[in-house]
Amino acid sequence: MRVPPFARYQRLLANFALMVSGAIIGSAVYMSIHQHTYTQLYVEMHKYLQENRDLRADIDSLNKTKNKQSLINVVNVHLVPKNQDELISEDIQKEIESDIKSELKLVIGQKATYVKDAQPLYEKLITQKTYVLHDKKYIVEVKSIVLIQTELTVWITAQEKRT
Image (cartoon, rainbow, N blue to C red; front, side):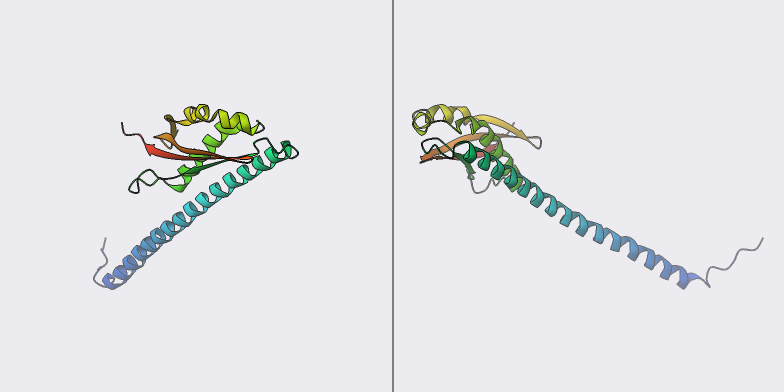
């Protein structure tokens, strides 16, 4: 049996190998760009879904108490960074805010005077509570609670718990 001389095909094989490696590198670059845009799309979708849930909850609470001006209608939660070097991702911030908002849902529909008198109780309900999100633990502390007419606004800080 005769073996063909590969010296004839050396340039053809080199060009073929270059073309195959270019296709592999090109597909890897395309996949990384696709994955990056998909991740951004997912984060935006999650943000819009959360905003939609919040707005629907606000509409429900406003419809429940629309004719009663002395009742709490809206609960707003704002997460502010405790340290500038410890920034929490926007996705986790929204999840912590929604968890606290769901805990303070019991305030909606109560008289503003009762809520004003019980502010330390609501502060103790939230402070030093641990939330587990994405396999990380976050400790939440209340910075301030403000009651303006029918709107309760809570400013909190969250810090990742180091174990």
